[in-house]
Image (cartoon, rainbow, N blue to C red; front, side, top):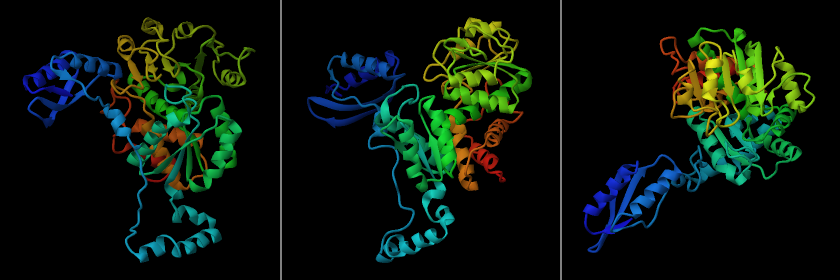
Length: 446
């Protein structure tokens, strides 16, 4: 930003930003000349649209020319967020002779003679492939593999930060099920686990099933099973708050995609007896010939009362609402029609099924996927510990029992003294979460 040499103009800029809802965090003079100052102003905005409003406001200050605008989020992504570093010194010829030829040949032959040693003698024992086709990225939809790359890089960074696992973004230029399965099968020898990410339903179900059948390493679809683990953990503690039992409550799940299906499957495995799934057309009920094969299977496993109707209708007398569907589909005025002390999990991202603040007026416990409200349902609570445990145990598959144990480990991280309607799930930065989940998965002491 260029300003007139008068320093009062700089103060006017700060005042203008504050007046328009921004927060100035730093002002630095980058260059001073007799006729002008070049000033770097760092400020916080609510979102991208608000930042543009601040730029327009500052541009309107007399004596100011906005030269360049940078977004700190974009700056953080310049050049990517992850890198490869050598774990061994490469300073001398002797170092090179062991890390590479000729010494590396002996190690390769040792693995050839004893293939199981590959986990000990290579990065395989601590590596995960984060695989996507870019068809269902966050709440952004089918944006393709290139646009999915920043998300997969972020996932890899989270693996390293929370579980010290080396993860690699694998963004495939195909949305053909056979091609994706074959591509993952071909790269699998270099990895200790496969994390499927942001692949649209129903294709993701077949891909996961086929890879689990063909590979000797665990395959985990985080959008399904990671979400299900954290939801079950949070619901376990929410029901503790309202003094209800999972086997006794009525649960309505909005969304019959990958996440909804996995949540329902894990809830049933945990002992839930009355679960109704709702999609755009209403409640899924057995015998409805209009249902797809996947939805027919889901209907057959749920809705024991054969409830029919819209979300509003099936929500009456329900104890729990879990949304993994679309923004704004739950009218907060419907919540009082639920059973006493209702629990509402509105998890659609980036905008939930109901405004958490509005839901909080009527519900006993509210959770969302947002970081600006209590009780954030965040998969980071699950997947680092899940893979840490799988890799430590040298596991070849992920079982339902593992998922149940992981959910209980997360729930148990919140002590009786800490448990509160606004604190049913630990922070992703809680130092014990990853190691407890890992221990639950591997069956080893934490």
